[in-house]
Image (cartoon, rainbow, N blue to C red; front, side):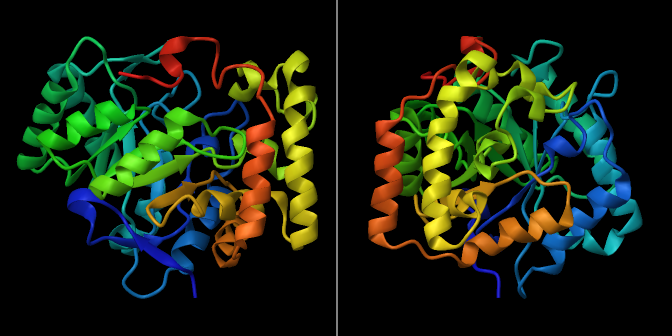
Length: 340
């Protein structure tokens, strides 16, 4: 049976599998993935649910490909139109409050309300369970943002508040205004630094869940990407600094070492990476992306892998001894770790 954990804050009564499901790359790509393929992937997660648990998919109102940046929400709506019985089996988290193009944070009251209303309309009757501003907007104190989000909760727009790409200090300040249920940050052997460790530690102290996005290093830790040409044309990963030709060869060194450990363990490198992310704490929930049911089930199976203290130490030492080259995004500090 699939192992479960709980979300945090006001959602602490929500039971969910220890591994969630990122939906972004179903639609944030030049080549469209057929609906039925995506639906089978989502359905695989739901079909694996133990009694009393809810699937934990992660979406965003900008997870589309121009000109339709709302493409991911449109896909989710089509799924629930076809499978309305699954609405109550899912706890969906949706990010927003970014001005496009440019991914510029905008947490003005007008932006937050308009964004949430758009998400609600797109979901077509599925309750918006948790809303997250996708980044911190420096123009507005986090305390003011949390007060307004709490007002939207009171109005019944959504039930729980999440935050994304924040520092430990910002989390503490935000949580003092209203309980934060989920913090979404990047966590993987490919991306694990002091900032990340501090947020994970404070979240545990405060009873907040961590949604660990890109736990497979944007696909690098699965072994599927070894050179830039392995990334499809039009895929945003071609623009990420760590995937540039001059950086990728060096960065693959950590993948090679993780793969060697996985081979000894007789699991895939992706599964080993997910098991390692889970080892950061019971409150840390990896949300790997997948648009194939087979890969979704492979990811789900990682929850059954138990790493020994010696194996965890070996992976930790690999990470500590390998310096990644290139920022996590496009060289834009606004998109990197935000110590505000």
